Amino acid sequence: MSELNNILPGGPGKGGKERISEENLMLYLEGKLTPAQQHEVEQWLAEEGMESDAVEGLKTISPVETRLTVNKLNHQLHKTLHHKKRKRRPVASNYYTLIAMGIILLLAIVAYLVIRKMT
Image (cartoon, rainbow, N blue to C red; front, side, top):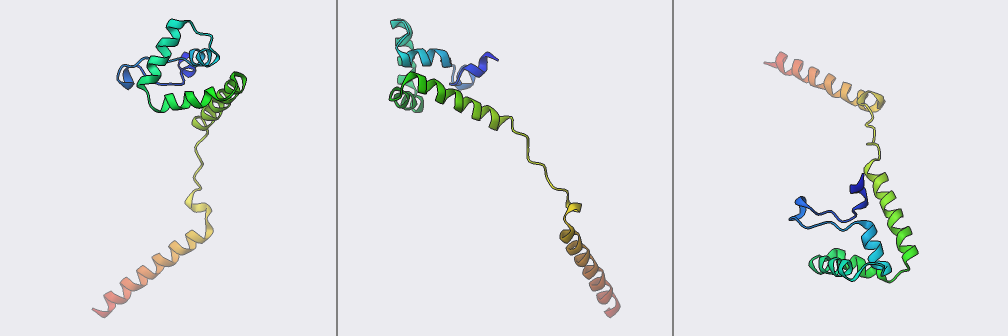
Protein backbone atom coordinates (compact mmCIF):
# COMPACT_ATOMS: atom_id res chain seq x y z
CA MET A 1 0.00 0.00 0.00
CA SER A 2 2.93 2.33 0.64
CA GLU A 3 3.75 2.01 -3.04
CA LEU A 4 0.61 4.02 -3.82
CA ASN A 5 2.19 7.02 -2.08
CA ASN A 6 5.18 6.95 -4.44
CA ILE A 7 4.02 9.06 -7.34
CA LEU A 8 7.30 8.68 -9.18
CA PRO A 9 8.17 5.07 -10.03
CA GLY A 10 11.75 4.00 -9.86
CA GLY A 11 13.76 1.34 -8.13
CA PRO A 12 14.88 -1.74 -10.01
CA GLY A 13 12.41 -1.20 -12.82
CA LYS A 14 13.84 2.19 -13.75
CA GLY A 15 17.58 1.76 -13.85
CA GLY A 16 17.95 1.49 -10.07
CA LYS A 17 16.96 5.09 -9.39
CA GLU A 18 15.38 5.69 -6.02
CA ARG A 19 11.83 6.84 -5.62
CA ILE A 20 10.71 10.10 -4.12
CA SER A 21 7.61 9.75 -2.02
CA GLU A 22 4.67 12.02 -2.57
CA GLU A 23 5.04 13.35 0.98
CA ASN A 24 8.72 14.30 0.47
CA LEU A 25 7.87 15.98 -2.80
CA MET A 26 5.07 17.96 -1.15
CA LEU A 27 7.40 18.96 1.72
CA TYR A 28 9.96 20.06 -0.88
CA LEU A 29 7.38 22.25 -2.60
CA GLU A 30 6.42 23.76 0.77
CA GLY A 31 10.08 24.34 1.65
CA LYS A 32 9.91 22.19 4.79
CA LEU A 33 12.75 19.74 4.06
CA THR A 34 16.16 19.82 5.67
CA PRO A 35 18.95 21.13 3.42
CA ALA A 36 20.26 17.58 2.91
CA GLN A 37 16.83 16.25 1.92
CA GLN A 38 16.23 19.28 -0.31
CA HIS A 39 19.57 18.68 -2.03
CA GLU A 40 18.64 15.01 -2.59
CA VAL A 41 15.34 15.97 -4.20
CA GLU A 42 16.99 18.64 -6.35
CA GLN A 43 19.68 16.20 -7.45
CA TRP A 44 17.01 13.67 -8.42
CA LEU A 45 15.08 16.36 -10.33
CA ALA A 46 18.26 17.38 -12.18
CA GLU A 47 18.54 13.82 -13.51
CA GLU A 48 14.90 13.66 -14.59
CA GLY A 49 13.34 15.58 -17.46
CA MET A 50 9.58 15.49 -17.35
CA GLU A 51 9.33 15.25 -13.56
CA SER A 52 11.48 18.35 -13.18
CA ASP A 53 9.16 20.29 -15.50
CA ALA A 54 6.14 19.08 -13.54
CA VAL A 55 7.64 20.25 -10.24
CA GLU A 56 8.41 23.65 -11.76
CA GLY A 57 4.74 23.90 -12.73
CA LEU A 58 3.62 22.85 -9.25
CA LYS A 59 5.78 25.57 -7.71
CA THR A 60 3.60 28.21 -9.39
CA ILE A 61 0.50 27.25 -7.36
CA SER A 62 -0.05 27.28 -3.62
CA PRO A 63 0.81 24.20 -1.51
CA VAL A 64 -2.86 23.71 -0.60
CA GLU A 65 -3.89 23.72 -4.25
CA THR A 66 -0.98 21.40 -5.03
CA ARG A 67 -2.15 18.86 -2.44
CA LEU A 68 -5.73 19.07 -3.73
CA THR A 69 -4.58 18.66 -7.32
CA VAL A 70 -2.33 15.71 -6.52
CA ASN A 71 -5.07 14.01 -4.50
CA LYS A 72 -7.58 14.56 -7.29
CA LEU A 73 -5.18 13.18 -9.92
CA ASN A 74 -4.38 10.15 -7.75
CA HIS A 75 -8.09 9.50 -7.24
CA GLN A 76 -8.85 9.79 -10.95
CA LEU A 77 -5.91 7.54 -11.84
CA HIS A 78 -6.96 4.94 -9.28
CA LYS A 79 -10.55 5.08 -10.55
CA THR A 80 -9.43 4.70 -14.17
CA LEU A 81 -7.11 1.78 -13.43
CA HIS A 82 -9.73 -0.09 -11.41
CA HIS A 83 -12.69 0.65 -13.67
CA LYS A 84 -14.54 -2.45 -14.74
CA LYS A 85 -13.97 -3.56 -18.28
CA ARG A 86 -16.72 -2.81 -20.72
CA LYS A 87 -19.08 -5.71 -21.11
CA ARG A 88 -19.27 -7.10 -24.61
CA ARG A 89 -22.67 -7.59 -26.07
CA PRO A 90 -23.23 -11.18 -27.13
CA VAL A 91 -23.72 -11.76 -30.85
CA ALA A 92 -27.14 -13.33 -30.24
CA SER A 93 -28.51 -10.08 -28.79
CA ASN A 94 -28.25 -8.29 -32.13
CA TYR A 95 -31.26 -9.41 -34.15
CA TYR A 96 -30.12 -7.90 -37.46
CA THR A 97 -26.73 -9.57 -37.27
CA LEU A 98 -28.36 -12.96 -36.90
CA ILE A 99 -30.65 -12.31 -39.87
CA ALA A 100 -27.68 -11.20 -42.03
CA MET A 101 -25.68 -14.29 -41.06
CA GLY A 102 -28.66 -16.52 -41.90
CA ILE A 103 -29.14 -14.91 -45.32
CA ILE A 104 -25.44 -15.25 -46.15
CA LEU A 105 -25.46 -18.90 -45.09
CA LEU A 106 -28.60 -19.57 -47.15
CA LEU A 107 -27.09 -17.88 -50.22
CA ALA A 108 -23.89 -19.93 -49.84
CA ILE A 109 -25.90 -23.17 -49.70
CA VAL A 110 -28.00 -22.20 -52.74
CA ALA A 111 -24.87 -21.20 -54.69
CA TYR A 112 -23.23 -24.54 -53.82
CA LEU A 113 -26.29 -26.49 -54.97
CA VAL A 114 -26.57 -24.50 -58.23
CA ILE A 115 -22.90 -24.95 -59.07
CA ARG A 116 -23.06 -28.66 -58.25
CA LYS A 117 -26.16 -29.19 -60.40
CA MET A 118 -24.55 -27.33 -63.37
CA THR A 119 -21.51 -29.62 -63.40
